[in-house]
Image (cartoon, rainbow, N blue to C red; front, top):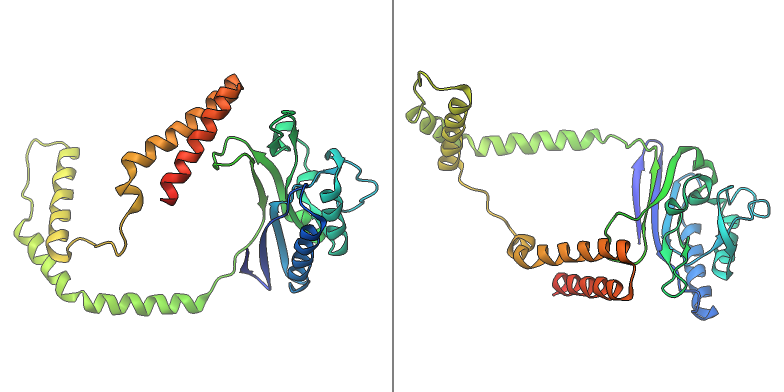
Length: 282
């Protein structure tokens, strides 16, 4: 998945990728990195780039051998997927932002092996080497409930969005057109408001006076303009009595797993996740 954002004098391209797992065959990995390389080659070198995804790659801590690609804060050893990712970054002058910021182990790792219970750093955010100064921080966020076994990775960058003045002129013309259409409704609102004008209420405090005045304005507004009708049904409100308890149950199961860390707690969390997914996808 790709997205392009215009910023002053250049563009920012955001790519999201999901690499084959470590146990996948070499043909699948070659096809994935070939497609990713073709996507990177189509992006202008003058444009900024953010590549984020689950690469199932252990890049290790050998920053001397991968100078300019890795920082001084890597973890563990490098696997085959990590070597593929580092070679891709070397070819396109990219850097892994996760490795350039110091922090605790919890702020670096993103996934725990289900059998060995060891944490690894598999998810990465990659930018161009010249963009590294604009990246303020990159870390893992284990408190974010994303409904998956990987932790969310967040990066903070300095980006100045461009202003589109032509859109402002179009918006003004649209608002002016709507105002012309609502002249009759505005006159009707004034008539309702004048009929229901609130007299002075001696002895009432400010909060009561404001409550009565607000009710008067809202009642006149509904009588003149009517209520806005939704074009599409509100799925969340219709299924709130079922979906909200399911999400709360998943959150409680996640907290219980962090405190007890037993097989029963893990099964309870997996069941809660499956229940939420079933409700969301129907």
